[in-house]
Length: 187
Image 1 (cartoon, rainbow, N blue to C red):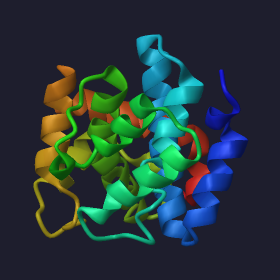
Image 2: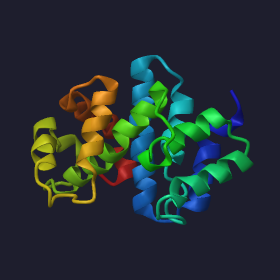
Image 3: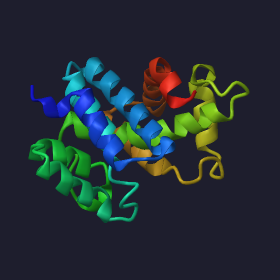
Image 4: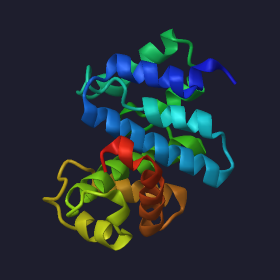
């Protein structure tokens, strides 16, 4: 395995391009969900973690579509990341037209929006702890369009369907993955 995928390397790249704590926390959450997904499916957790950590690293600098993630893809290529890695990251934004043709790409799409939503659910808990968030409460809040309104609920449903999982199962996966990194997430 190349050094491109180590946490030290990917974290340095994330921090070089992402300065806000909120976007960094989102990256840590998606990293954790991707690592758990890799372990669940027998894939490389280091590679999948790197995908999760870097999927939005360019967003702060290029928040408008299609610049994000296309500008980030250019940076990744310049840094020597292979096309498979770059395409996986590109595929998390449907408007790029890059197909989600790998398990890693499908999982990234499935957990991205859901990580943010589960973190929002934790923030409204009395103790702001992700350990207190239950699948049932996430499901209920998904029905409230004014709660975390920017989260794309259709993408959450589509992501679960692409994996052949029930929505509650993917919610449970994300919640469980966030618990070990709760301190890093401020939750």
